[in-house]
Amino acid sequence: MPYILLTLAAVMFGLYNVFIKLSADHIQAVFGAVVLQFVAAFVGRRAASGWRYWRALQSDSSKS
Image (cartoon, rainbow, N blue to C red; front, side, top):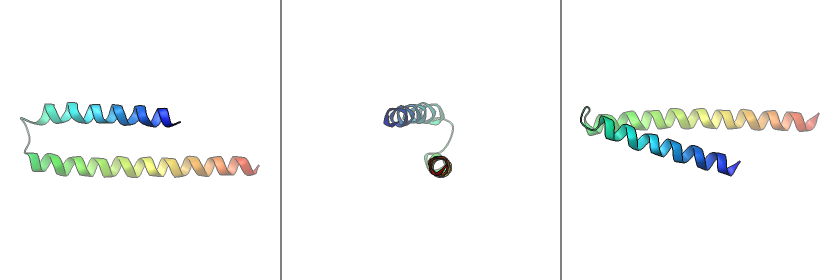
């Protein structure tokens, strides 16, 4: 499981770098930072919700 999370983090960081470089000439730095923070919060919240849901499923299946 840690390798999957590590791979996911590396892919996300790589995509972050690609999109920052692509958008550098098109948007202002402050706007890009604000958008980045909102996207990071949304993705993090979604990942945390998915993790809690998965853990709940695991605990329910172990009780059976």
